[in-house]
Image (cartoon, rainbow, N blue to C red; front, side, top):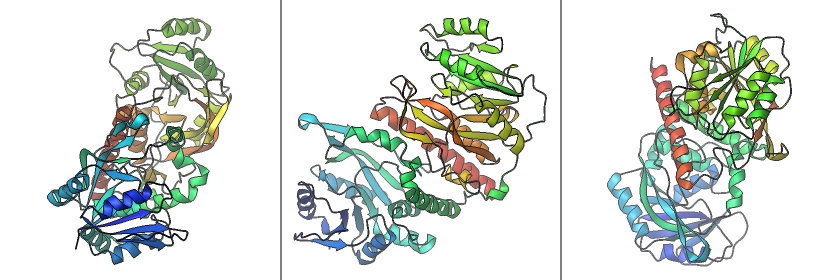
Length: 490
C-alpha cells in the first residue's frame, strides 16, 4: 500500500484535475478523497467523490479517518490547486519519517505575474501558535497514528461544522511535534491581494460569529487538556485606591513623526468632559519631522499637557508607555490614545474611568470604529470584540490576535509589570498578563476612531515583517500558556 491518502475539497478550477493527476501519479498516493456538497461527475483512477458536509466538519473528518488505512493523511484545505515541486512530496514524506512528527508543513511558492513564482515563507510552529488562522500554507501532512492516539487520549472532534481541522491539529500537537520544513515544496495559484484587508478583521466580523463560537469551544477544550485553562472564579478585582496620585487619569500618547495628526489627537484628548482632573502625557520619541515643534506650541495652549522626551533613543512604543507610567505626572488610571487616532466623543474618558472605578477593574477595553484619514467610516466599521465574555474572555484572549481599543489600565498595577519594550503587540502582551489574574471590563459601544491610512505602522507590511509580528505574538502566547500551566500546577 502506498503511504498517503489525500483529502481535498472539490474545485471547478481548470487546474484542479491537473493537481489530482500529479498526486495519483506520484507513486506515493494510495487514493484521493474529493469532498463536494454538490453532485460532481468526476471519473479518475484512485479518486472518489464523497458528497456531504464540508472538510472542516466533524462528520466528514471522522468518516475519512475511519476509512484511512495509509500511514499518512495529506489535507489540502484550500480546494487543492497545488503543484508540487519535483520531489516535493517525497521531501515532505521524508521529513515526516525522520522527525516522527504528528504533522508536517512547508513553505511554498505563489504564482505571480508573468509566470514568476513568489516565495511565501511561513513561521515555525510553537506552543503559542494557537490562532485558528495560523498559516500552514495549502498542505498539511498528518501521521495517521498520531491522530488516532490523540483522539483516544483526548477525545475526538466535537460536533462542529467549521472547526474540525483546528481541533485536529490542536489535539495532535499536545504530544506530537508540528514540524515546519523551511523549503518551498509546492506552488499555489495566485490569490487576490485585495482580500487581505478583510482577513485582518475576520475574527470580529459578525458574519463569522458561528465560526468563532466553534473555534472558541475547541480552543477552550484544548486549554483544559494542557492544563492552561483558568476558571473565571480565579480572577480578582484590582485595588485601585492603594496609593495617592496627583491626578485621577492620564491620557497617554506615544508619538514619533506624526506632525500631520498629533495636533488632532491632543485636541481630542483635551475635549473630554469629566468630573475629575486629568492630564495628557505625550511621549515624543525623538521626532524629526516637526512633531516636537507642534507639541511645544500645544503646550502653551494646554497647561495640563505634559511633554516627555526619553533620555534613550532606542525605545519602542512599549518603552514610551513605561516612560509615562513611571513618571510623576501619571494619574491613577492611564488611558490610551494613538497619535493618529481620535476619541469618538467628549465622554470617552469619563465612561472608561467610571467603569474602572465602579468595577475595580485592572483594565478596561472599549470598542472602536475604522475610519479613513478624513474620518469617514470604512469597512468593517465597528470593531467591538463581542466575542469576549466575562466567563471565558480571559481564556479566549489567547486564541485571537487582538482585544480592542481604547485600552485603559490601573497605573499602580502596571507599575509592577511595565510594558514590553517593543513597537508591536506590547498592549496585547500586557492584556494577557493582566487577564491571567485580574478582571477586565469591556465597553461595547464605539469610543474611538481608528484611522487606517498609509502612515499606520502596520500598513503595507512585507511578508517577512508580517511573519515577524505573528511570530512575536505567538511567543507572547507561548510564555503566557506556560505561566498559566505553572500557576495551575501550584
